Length: 120
Image 1 (tube, helix red, strand yellow):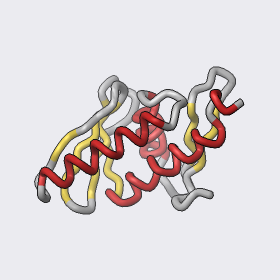
Image 2 (cartoon, rainbow, N blue to C red):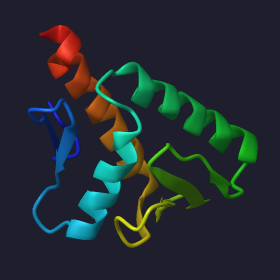
Image 3 (cartoon, helix red, strand yellow):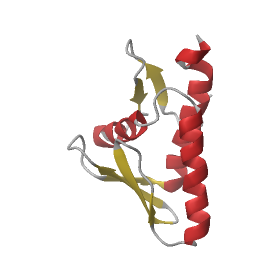
């Protein structure tokens, strides 16, 4: 069950699609979807990313840091704000609450545990 109300699905090519809750800007939804393209359909990649993200947070001690994927960049701007940065002209750079960002990735990993192609 999603804690964030963001939903995920796999299309016919096993690409993860993202559905944002009502009121979320389409650009932010596209930014999240583009970011997670780099994870594929296994739950290990978003979990590994989150472990590294949290390790960087602990080491940075409040300072900004960056950790992207092959499809988008991510910068922690402060304790409560994350910026998702476009790498290939697919969306406009945008910000998201840091706690929500991590929760979305946790929800994605849980979804992939249940629905990934290796589970079929």
